[in-house]
Image 1 (tube, helix red, strand yellow):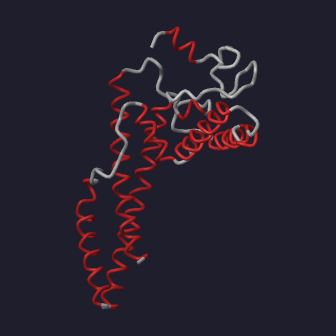
Image 2 (cartoon, rainbow, N blue to C red):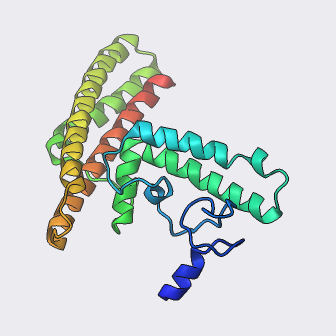
Image 3 (spheres, rainbow, N blue to C red):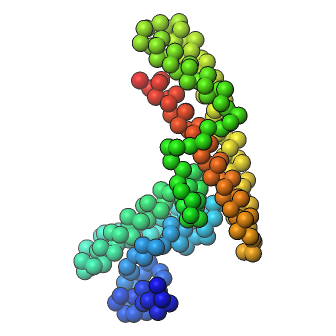
Length: 226
């Protein structure tokens, strides 16, 4: 897209004032949402992992009031549509940025990495424990089905011990994630692509392990919720 076209995109649809705000700085009309806007820019926040969450929350409620449909009940259909579009993105952006793991995943996507999905990496140092946990869960289901309460309670204690260990491991990974993101947030502008890629690969690897452990914890909870 040419620079001229980009400038036209940023012109107010009503008075042609150049603006990149939610509302025109001249006529104060709500603006067309640029779908290429990322969640950080939407809130006028730096693209970093460590955010001032109170500031994020304040901006969310401020914009929620400004985009509220009541303010556009007498406006044109076009302005009502712009309000709805911005409200939708506001909610999506807030849900993503306020949660550390969602925010980390989103940052990766902005850097061209795929989101961490269901296909996650098994932490090598937990292979033996995970194999044992799967066996315990199988036996636990059998004990539940056969109504062997003594065996069930014994296995439940073992599984809960494993659950505690997994939570501790997840906390260690989250600590490491925060540390690496601190390096990422403070990278100088002249950092090499190799240095950036190395940090992002480490972040992606940690997120994958956290996701894997969280899936295991969810499986454990499901066994006891039934």
